[in-house]
Image (cartoon, rainbow, N blue to C red; front, side, top):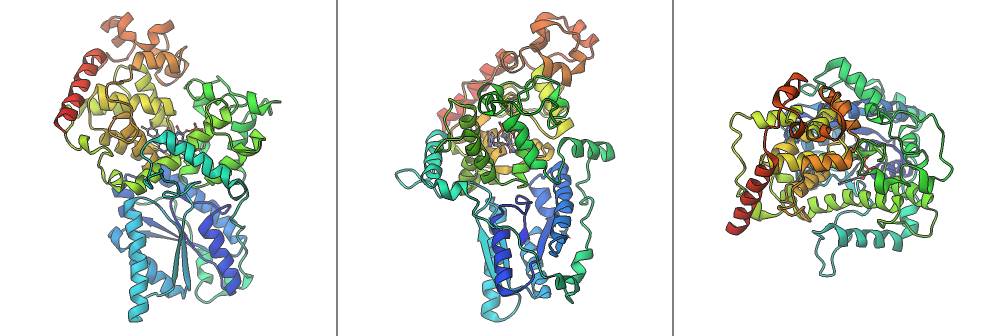
Amino acid sequence: YWSRNKDLRLDDNTALSYASAVAQDMHLPLVVLHIFSIGDYKSHDRSPRRIDFQLRQLAYLKEQLAALDIPLYTLTHSGNRKDVPRVVCDLLEEWGATGLYANLEYEVDELRRDTEILERTKRARETGEGWKGQVELFKDFCIVAPGEILTKQGKPYSVYSPYQRSWLAQINSHLGDYMHKQNGPVIANPSSTRSHPVLGSLFSHQIPESIPGFELEGGEDEASRMRRLWPVGDGVTESIMHRFLRTKMRPAKFFEAPLESEADGDVADPKKKSKIGEYCEGRNRVDWDGTSHISPYLAAGLISPRECIRLAFKLAGGKELPGGRDTGIGMWVQEIAWRDFYQAVLVAWPRVSMGKPFNLKYDGTVAWAMDNDGAKLKAWKEGRTGFPIVDAAMRSLKEQGYMHNRCRMIVASFLSKDLLIDWREGEKFFMQSLIDGDLGSNNGGWQWSASTGCDPQPYFRIFNPASQSEKVDPDGAYIRHWVPELRGVKGKAIHDPSAKLTKKEIEKMGYVMPIVDHAKARTKAIEAFKECVASA
Ligand code: FAD
């Protein structure tokens, strides 16, 4: 079983479960392989945080697999990334493997890599040279796999709402298949695997502590912060889901440590009074503990997305999976559907994984503003734009590798509209910083915000940072936490200090004046997009 970057778990893992059953049937040992391809990490802007998270989880999986007498072998490949198929096949030849089983990754480079493996083994079978075993690839990353639901005209959906209705109908019409785990558990190897002449030595193989070029910038300090914020190990995903499904929403300083355990115990009426029960309002407040924080675990596959909806279904207690906007559970299920939607978009329109806008009328024609010295982009990255909600959000990203969804939308709109900087700069910086960075969701979110994507925010609807700030953080608790310079600012002035305070007062607090005038920037952005549409 070839473990990939997005399926790092033993439970409900399609390819692993299948590989395990085949091994059992054929009385052959199962081996787990994981490749760290530095070339891919570089070209995909993989964040050191996500790699650190992956290494921690692999170390944990190694222990779990060892208890089943299954070796986990990792290999760091620093050469040309196009050589990965050859490297894998050579290893399989050396091990005398009969089959290779893996879950599909839907990004273009990954699909090309898998195609090359298939072609290579086909050639080997024809010529008799090289590894010629069986290769099987599985759909696992989504609940409803890309291509499985189409419009009435047989085309992929490019708009979310009808997609989501069809997605929900697909699940509810095959409820038994989705609500009962289809993937069996991993079966132990015979203990003699440990003394196998070739495979025995793999048990002593160590998982590396870091990958060259991807060490955490903040060293041990950052490593221990990431371990505290985003733990791995026994019962972690269960407790995160429990926390979201069964305990109450908190307006406390949760953003310091989003997954800190709750002292109060479970709520009596979780369908209504838990975080998920109050998700319709909770998801829009960045100062509340209103979302699940499961994204890093879903992105790297520490939890199966099917398990997420199974838990939601069980809590809802009805005959169907709810997916409407009228209950917290239904609303949350809708968010999970966004994740599948963006994967389906990746597969149907592969150009979005190649730096192209979904909507080609915006391909290179928007007059992105000149930021020659990079000062504006730098201010945005560092959280020093003079717009408190933007700065608070960008600083939370730096500290935690995570940002609240509302804030992701606000900072993305600010970069692509107020600063008129190419959204691809923001997309890249997010991938380099997020612990939950995932091409489909990240690209989808950026293109939505920049109005270049499928089902986009229309270009003339531009977020006003100050009024957004009042909505999502009415008392300014989130801003005061992340932007300590502003702690002394009273009342509503926290959302737009330069409207109430003088430049001298702002600078005295150690804060900065706004780097753009929002009203003027808005007009300029609308003009730039309008021109682009007119010339398309
Ligand atoms: P919850 O609100 O609890 O939602 C549950 C899960 O549903 C999430 O964990 C996620 O897997 C999925 N989900 C929720 N909203 C979305 C969405 N809009 N699109 C796709 N999936 C969604 N999400 C990522 O997982 N990785 C990214 O790299 C990423 N980049 C983004 C960039 C931008 C500009 C925007 C606007 C959104 C991005 N998102 C990304 C989506 C969303 O912001 C995060 O999934 C969410 O904030 C994670 O927090 P949570 O787990 O508490 O979410």
